[in-house]
Length: 204
Image (cartoon, rainbow, N blue to C red; front, side, top):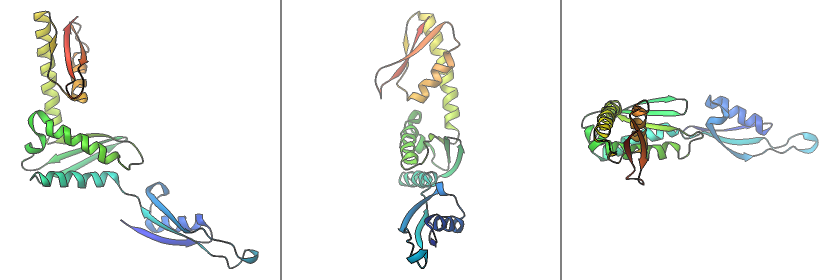
């Protein structure tokens, strides 16, 4: 992590000098004031302001290192493609034995996504929403859930009775709700408590 010690006639001058040396902006650094500077007799020969400025931790880079380390401990070597769009950050993983990181019905990937969300927002100056993907699994899972939603809606109307789906994380339940929101034959709602909260589909 780069850091510099800089001085100036005033505290602001010292900070500005450090920012120029690091080629960065104030919101990207941590500033430690070593000497606030004092004026001498008649404003002459006073001590100069001195600051130590270092680049703040990059939460996204730290999170990439965290993912790499977790994967390594599971015996998986991964490559990470990171995309940041406003307050949404997506980590796309690829590599051999990637199925180990996905787990049954994405359970391992979902658990890791929760941990990654905590890590990236631990010391971040802005809050990020996190998506952790592995070789396009999220897209395939979405398609599977949308197909499941259609089949279960058809079953609910055919039996004229409620149909309960298996427990899912909130973002997967949202896919089911969205897939059926225009289906006038059924309505959906979530029931139960985490981690057993699930979707119920009932005939309208």
